[in-house]
Length: 228
Image (tube, rainbow, N blue to C red):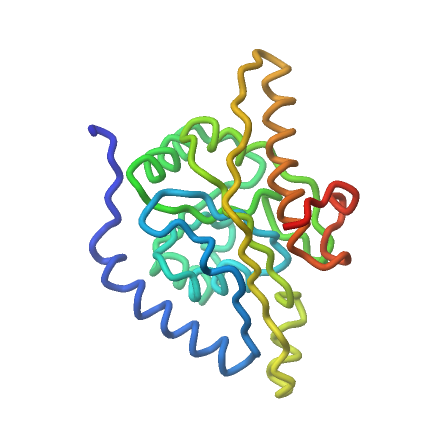
């Protein structure tokens, strides 16, 4: 495969140490619960779709996920001291929110077709509140091009005040709720109807995700939540 993606060796070597470091930090600061690990299709490509409340979400999932995930992250965070260095050390893929980036989508599709699982936040950015916002259609386009399953993963407790509560010794609860793989309907529509079909598929992912979460986390998907 001419466009096959290979994870750079320095990321392969460095990631286990970073994952172990963050697992230790999260265990020290919080009571961690991970439910549904048996649903993960080990050794196969898939897309992990999460609700995105705060900056704690990607490192939480990346640290405890039993396989190495390729992770997408907001490009503006790369310029922040500390956070930027950690993202670069892991090999997070920078995303310019709100922009259509053909080269980025080409790379993402290559990553998945080369057999690597990918982490994405379909909302396109942090909500800063527990209630989910409407998804962007990008996840549906990625699945349309790769035909891999989506793993809905609900995160509870990663609110923006997590650090304040944790450093006071409260050891708040952090939960990762892993749903069963979803196969999205194939899109055959053209033109404007294709965009509508992609949005519908993105919303379907979020409805399954909402079904894993408490009511206060469901936001705009409260009425359409699909119970696991």
